[in-house]
Amino acid sequence: MRFRFFKTIGLAGLVFAACAGQSNAACVNSPSAQTDASFPSSLTGKVAYHSYVSYGDGTSQIFTYDFSARTLTQVSKSTWGIKDPMNAVFSPDGKWLAFMGVTNNAWNVFMWQVGSTNAPINLTNSTGQTRNEDPKFSSDGSLLFFKQNGDVMQATLSFTSAGPTLTSVTDVTNSAPSIENSMPFPTPDSSAIYYATGTGAGLGLYKEILATHTKVAFDTPAGLSTYYPIVRADGTVFYARWKDATSQADQIYSKLNPGDTPNQLPINDCKSNNSDPSPVSNTSYVFFSSTTAGGYQLYVGDANTGKRWSLTQFGVNADSTKAKLGSNYYAGASTPAAGLLSQGKTATASSSYNTSLTPDKAFDGNTVSTRWDSIEGSSAGTQWLAVDLGAVKNITSVDLYWDAGAKVYSIQTSNDNVNWTTIYSTSSGVGYGHVSIPGLKGSGRYVRMVGTQRATPWGYSLDEMQVWGY
Image (tube, rainbow, N blue to C red; front, top):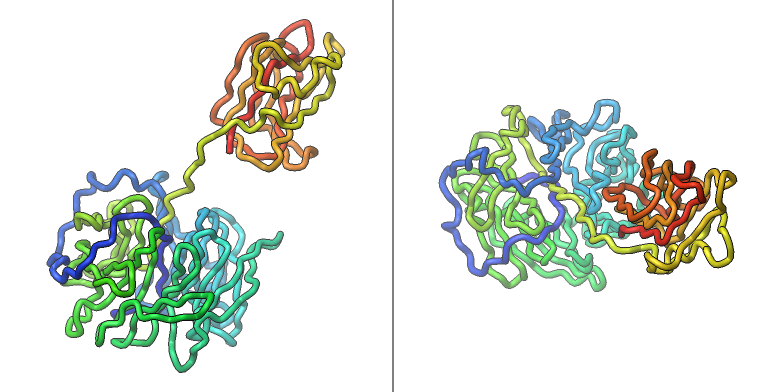
């Protein structure tokens, strides 16, 4: 089938500036793929997609390719008991995949924790009462939009000890069965939703304001099926529509406002179907499917230059009997700049030498003339110094300004000040001076240094302890 009502698309990302004015000559006849060696090195995230022989035949499986690890993985498993899993999309934090599939003889929406051995969680739990498809996350991950029985639904995502669940499910379009709505995708601020309305050659794109349910036509060319919208972070909409009514070939377009002229992207092959755009944030790259080499295969295109790279070198297109559709790219979470978290925060210790050498002195910003001292001598044994950061933080490094050091010590974190996790330990500590411990990977509200063997005849003493992170 030329247009596929049951595909899902990628998360929004900042890419190239929207172009005004339609360019029907933008496509290229049978464009050649760029060399494998020139594949964009900045693509270091993961792409999810599904592969099947034909829609609904039971052969669909979900795959991911990790560009950093260079690993191709079939994510879906027969033990899940889900027929035809497809249209997987990463949550904004990359920790979950939402997708659709058949269980109990009904289409349902599922979420699976990435990398988990647990089975996916059925969010819609239909046994035939409803048909649920096309899940999409809001940009902050708090909402899930999906199609149910021809209407667009909005649901709040809540997380319990048992996993994610849908609450506050509302019908956005409320026009089925007389009008079929599908393929929802929210705006970056979730104030509006784009979706396709109709079927066949009458399929067109609309935008609806969620607060008022005001609906406007976004792109509804007569006789040209127009569908599958994806909205990038600056509000530009990417979508597919027929090149013309005769060939009915899918081409990828973009536009920003309903009144703008559609822009036909230069990554299109005039002689093939090109669909399922999934832009990559902060670049001009777009993942998409194309039939240039026969059946649907996955490509990356540069929407500025029109250059195209096949994902064949990564094994993604190896099985030529199956179409690869519904690509969705997760670039990876950006790491905020680390800051000093501990200065001036509440501090405690296992002991203090006297009322002047108290734990707060190790977090006052003075690395020279104030300090914390534990009790001294052989009675010191194991001693600790802890700071309350006020909230759970990601810990990236710790600086210790020793006045009297520890030979054996550890850095530990805790969320509750009771249960502790060691994120660093050493048995070759120094007796005096500044020690920097970078590259830590831990989190917690509380951070402490635990000394178990002194490096001097005295106790443990720190002029300053600095905890860095975000």
